[in-house]
Image 1 (cartoon, rainbow, N blue to C red):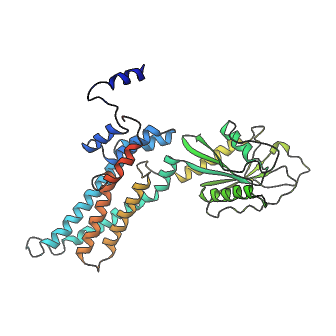
Image 2: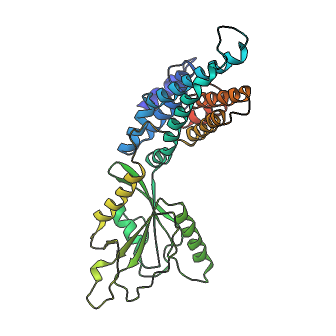
Image 3: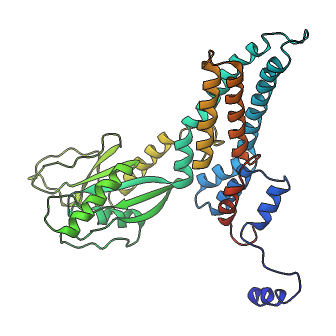
Length: 354
């Protein structure tokens, strides 16, 4: 019915389907929404978890824009004070040191920008997801755990070592957080070229992870552990196949014990992942940057404010130039200046007509 109606409407003169994001772009061009709010709206439409929704609401309702707008006003005021000293230094009613009073305020502003940048990883995790890599030797139960946590058959499970050659991926929703779970090839010494490539990819994925679940067969007679995990990535040692444990087996120490076949310990794994996610996203407010573009401009803002405040020997003209660059960078975040080149990409992410 809808398709037939749209087809009929297209036969009318001056009637066409809206382009992707066309209404939002018109709202932006007419000053109804700024670029941060537009990005928040796009994220809200794409949100799949509760935390993604909350983060998007903070942006789409203008709360993040309000922070950046206030910062830009403070920078513009500081620039005005500096320009007044530069342009009217000979006037009797313009104190010669009028700009001196702005530098402490700018130091305070720089600290506020730093706080925002400290929360950048939290915004990225909430928006894009927390990356968890399942690693270990062949036949450690990695694919079985992936299937059990996903509650569906994502990976092929056999008794043959080396079944998984490539990286497998599924998404979980754990207490409102998006979690990306990656199953990797079993890591061992091998001469088989395809398996070697799978191991190389597994090691690379571990380096990109936010958390590694290092699996070992708790029922194995050998207690060897030679997997080298990246030093800066947290690791949870998981003992698998706990249903096969007997008193005759050597004792091993694990952070968690699971049996994917018997669904034992799966809730504990989810809760352990959740604790790590919450630690990485522990912020006072969700009015934080969540896109690379926003973070890049904030780093530019901070660098220029720091240069203006700390370099007292470069002359007032150059310090004023740093303040101009800082305020321009803030303007680019909200779309006030010089952002035409990125508009097409941003609005193309919307579905038709939004």
